[in-house]
Length: 106
Image (tube, rainbow, N blue to C red; front, side, top):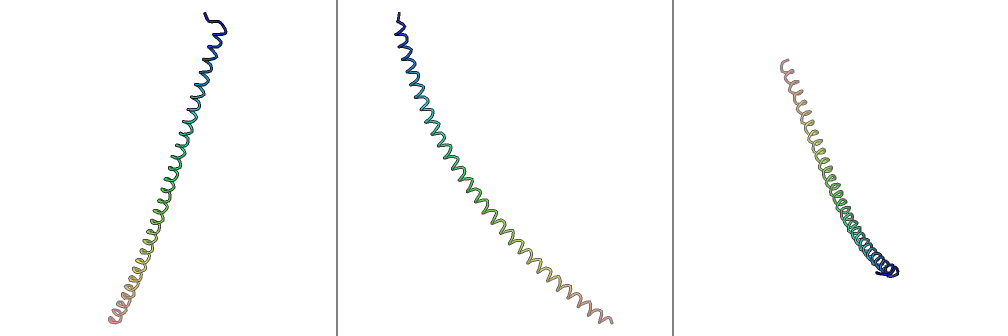
């Protein structure tokens, strides 16, 4: 039967191995957590860069859309101006014809 001293030595050895094993496991865990944190930060950086590229592409697309819309509005204004000018010429021509007609009628 082991003596109390032998049993204490055995328990101290077991406790020492437990502490070492726990310390090693904790260090591995911390190292893995640091790697995971770095991977997460890299992924977030890539995500933010991709999001910024997408925002920039959207801004450019909206700018092109606005420019195209402005060109279309300008073309419509010009077309309406030509239409109004044509309509005014037609009204004037109609008035002149009516005036001639009334003069002929007497």
